[in-house]
Image (cartoon, rainbow, N blue to C red):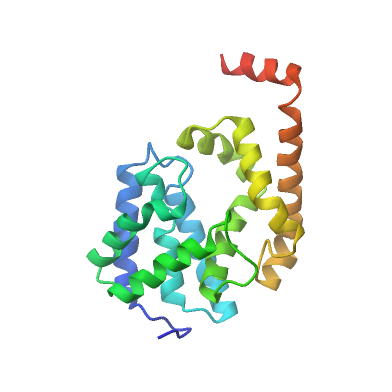
Length: 217
């Protein structure tokens, strides 16, 4: 079943893309961070990583398209919260049931909060693409405030989440699975995590808290 060329026909991949794009536009106010700008970036990068690691391109592309539909179901939720909607979208677009379940498994496997060192090639490609979006130097500057609004989190809660979920994975050496991605983007990832560690420390300073309260009022 798993070939680099892809288990899923491109016409079906495109149908999934059209369906998810429509949902992202319809609910743009609820997907300020995880909207089409995020989905399309992860899709493009995941396909690139799949080409390098030999994963099933079509399955990876579809997984990238539906990996964050959980945010349409519930704010600040794990990927598994989107399973019913994810499978519904895939069925509507003609993805076979067993392949749809495989896609759903890949999405769960690739999730930052729970992923391990030894995950499938497809999950590695998806994970690296999603992780790169988090590690981009522009993300904390341009997009972090959107994540806070979308998920109803405070800056402290977001800093705790990022440091708690990502630092151990980074320190244990599998922040990126693709060696080229690790060589190219690890400096960005390290700087990003250091920034969030500093933010985590800063929000423990009462004077900083007063500053944030003043800005927010």
